[in-house]
Image (tube, helix red, strand yellow):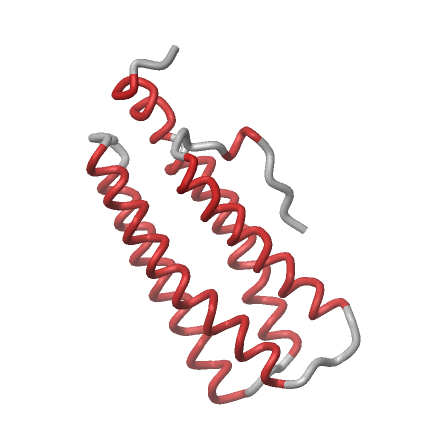
Amino acid sequence: MLTWNEKFATGSALLDTQHRMLFVKVNHLESLLDGPPQPKSAYDELINFLGTYAITHFEFEEECMLQYRCPTHGKNKEAHAAFLAKFGEFRNAYIEQGPEIELLRELQRFISDWITNHILAVDIGLRGCVKARSGLP
């Protein structure tokens, strides 16, 4: 399970709220996988949400980094494109195979690792930029 704490804070309240929502949804996927079998619609809904939310979130995050002139903007955009490509591969496999538990576990692990590593390696670069532009200590 992913646990939010201040080390993930970017300095943008809205961006941090979006990240928390991703934590909740990835944790929900893990809970589904650890519980009794669920109807396919439960997995469909979650995978569709994650795909759509990732696109919306990435667009907002990239705009935020541009607005605050964050030096990791280019790296961030590249990482987002790579994530979307990999997620697309998972989605295609899901469409072909259905809700196979091992495929869904692989997706959950991939997203959990990616979110944690991406936020800590790239997104927190925004923290200093937000502070500098807002005049906060």
